[in-house]
Image: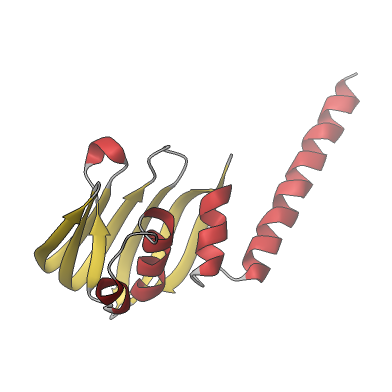
Length: 143
């Protein structure tokens, strides 16, 4: 199950989400603290791709390539399972719009990285419950 995402967030918060979702257990501490270092991954294992003015490859650890990026314009993130598909596009400076679909596991990491507020998620849950109730009402009306 995945839920729709459409929020404004900073690049740093989305960078944290990508790290939490992919490589928190093995990212070097120096890379974790550096806001210009991002994980990237090939298409065959769930794509993570940065569109930036300049990128330098720093290291490859497991299936993640760590890059140092300047002037990030956009990020494409797809989970290995395919249940999460997100795009971040720069609006102004480090602020951007994040859109796509997120799995329940990714929702937890989106909250943890402060991309989503608990209120936003509670609103999503309420909306989904209303939709489910409406569908159930339609089904019982047809009986």
